[in-house]
Image (tube, rainbow, N blue to C red; front, side):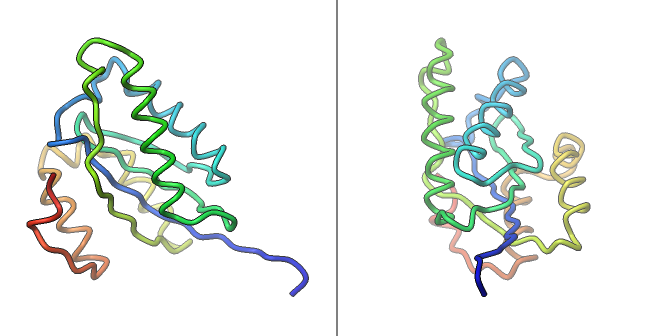
Length: 150
């Protein structure tokens, strides 16, 4: 093949340190826009970004030229620096150490877009921890509870 082509869709989820509710309505929209710009600079354009006060969901097209871990690391590093620059309580901001990433088939994009868009409604019924456990089960990801929640 004369050229390299790919379309890898990934659903990325990570939380604030100790799930502290830093991502308030006051910063959320600007945070989403900033995170989208970081993803764009990583050649991994966001299809949707949405967050709750203590975690974020991203659906993006992963770059064929960058490793997933490098893209996630750059998003977390850059957004952490940006959030801390807002001052006040946000100066103490940290992301949790890890993250969850789940592959998404093209046929499931609409469902994942809706899922990410409806986070607020979703969390009236389910905690973040239960949500992540469900995503792990749905995607057959083995995990150890001792190392998931920091």
